[in-house]
Image 1 (cartoon, rainbow, N blue to C red):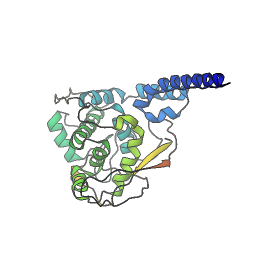
Image 2: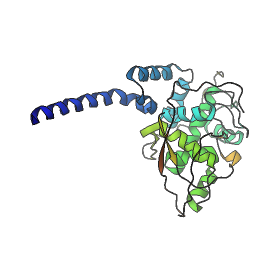
Image 3: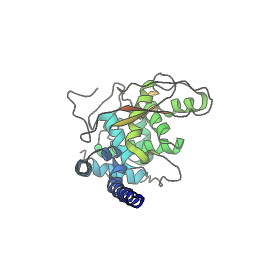
Image 4: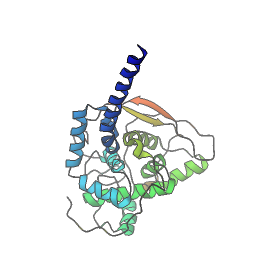
Amino acid sequence: MRIRFALRHRRRAVRLAGAAALTGCTCFLFPAIALLAPSAAAAQVTRIAAHPYAPHVAEAAQRFGIPEAWIWAVMRVESNGDAAAVSHVGAMGLMQIMPGTWSGLTARYGLGDNPWDVRGNILAGAAYLREMADRYGDLPSALAAYNAGPGRVDDWRARGRSLPAETVAYVAKIVPTVGASGIASRAGLRAVSHTPIARTASSWRSATLFALRGDGGQDGENAASGSASVAQVNLRASTSAASPALRTVHISMPPPHGLFASVSGGSE
């Protein structure tokens, strides 16, 4: 009896391991698809590969040494795939780059003179994400700086100054969708190329809330992003002068049905 019981559980473990191996490759690109049936997961990967932005995302990920999942996740939250999106504070395009941030990035990386160019905008967003990952060494802080500006994150880490509630919600919406690829390590990031780009034509079932401090305004030009988040979060004050710890709280989220949600009307 014990032998049959052990064999039955061993066979079940082998089946589970095989299923994990089949879904593992898709989880890295878009971890939420692991929650879908195998056929749906395969269809999601096909949609990503066939998307018109996919070559630019792949190029940006390769050039700036970050996972493609970071870029897709930020793009989805920032603009929902709308290349003509403009925020109420003037952030532009797919990756919602502020004008001052664009000027600095194109001067450093030769991104051209058109922040609305799809390729250039994606490259700019990836470049800024990489710069913030290098600066802070972890993805939540890098995303907070992308949204609110590094000045605000420096104040939060060094002096415990409140982060904007919008920024807390922003980080909470993105980090869970990138899974293991959300762990930033300076040692694991590839070297960045500063070679100017060639000129081209323009062309969830669960999420995590990060309990950070308070709310407040943005740093304007110091941030890449000026987008607003609709997520609601609970904030908790930090009593430490050092970088506050991040605490996770799970909430229910609707499953994704495509790369970008259907929207009506114009951008901000």
